[in-house]
Length: 209
Image: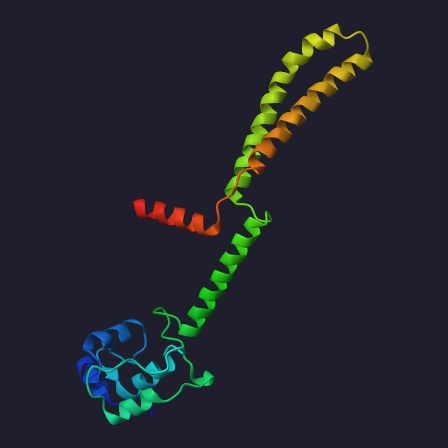
C-alpha cells in the first residue's frame, strides 16, 4: 500500500485505534517510528504499524502493552514476528535501531573489560601518566645538564691528564643517567586507575560544570 492509499489519522485517533496512550504515540514519533504525512501533521495508519513492528526491539517477544482495546487489524499486524530482512532502522537523525545499539554497547563493554584487564596485566598505561613521566624525566635531565658545567669545571681543572678528564665526565654522565632512571622507576611503581575509575572521575568532573 502506497502513502496516497493509506489512511491518515491524528495522533489521538491513531492511539485509540492501536489501543495505546497518546503519550506513547508521541514517543514513537520522536523516535522516528511513525510514518507521517508530508505536512507532518497526521499519522499514516498501515505504514506506521509496519514501521513500529519492524523497529521493535528483537529481545521483546510481545509488542507494547495496550492501555485500551486495539483494533483487530492493528493487533494482528503488531503481533507478527519480524524476520531479519524486515528489520528497519528508525528515521535518520532520530534514533538507531535496537540491534545496532545493542551491538555497539556490547562492543564498548568488551573493550572496557579488555582495557581493565590489560591495565591489571601491566600492558596498558594511561596516556596522561606517560606524558607526566616524560615531562618529569626531561625536567630531571635538563636540571642535571644545567648544573653539570658548574660541577665539572673545577674537577677538570684539577685533572692531570686526559684520562682523568674522561673519568670525571663519565661520572657526571652516569650520575645524570642514574637520576633519570630513578625518575622512571618512581613513576613506574604508581598504580594507574582502571577504566571504570577514569570514567567515574570524568563523570564526576562533568557534573561539577
